[in-house]
Image (cartoon, rainbow, N blue to C red; front, top):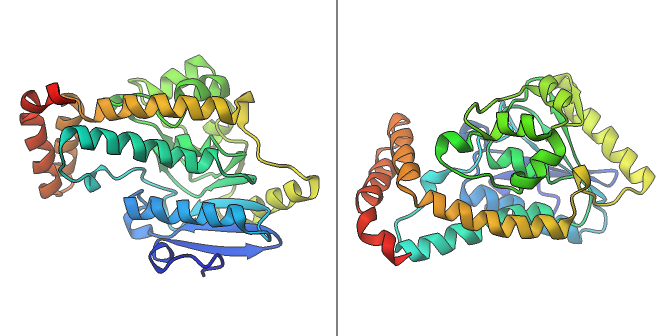
Length: 280
């Protein structure tokens, strides 16, 4: 399905369907857990851009195919380049990723069909709302990876969840709530049986259209404020990704997954870090 005249490349990664003013944008790489490679992110950013201009689209439902909503950003796609250039690229990519959600002009409902990790969680909280299957889980393992908060979660999570729950999720505990737990703490607004997810999401979207609900943000946050926070967090994320701790952890993780080439690249960058760090 390709209801938005998406590019052929984008159509390899997502599917779209329009019904009664509700456009469903579905990430469609289930064998790869809908991981956010550059190609996947480019695909849904293209869909968001075109949906924003599409007169027949009143509300967007964003979801995933298969057992996962998304395994999050795939760092294995980072290619070797001069450190200063790499830092600038990371800042730009991180900022643009979340701006795709922040700047979307129409209501957007995330339908969490399964586990969500990292940026796929934080970006979802930047939408009008989240409806979750009981099979969904929410993981933000930034502390374990040596990364700072991203996706505006440094200020948005405390407002949405409270300080204690925020620390549980973003800190060393790395608490991973399921759908029911996420509802109880305010991370999601609805939970439903898995088989009813898209039907219930469509009902919510149709209700929004009937009520004339526009683009809103949870917890009283504003677009302007979140854009500024995202810009600052993107700098902090880039600095953390080029830290020795992160480089070594990524090397170990990728090696454990059998991705030996990217793992060796991260080890090499880590070992050479004393030579290039002063040029950042």
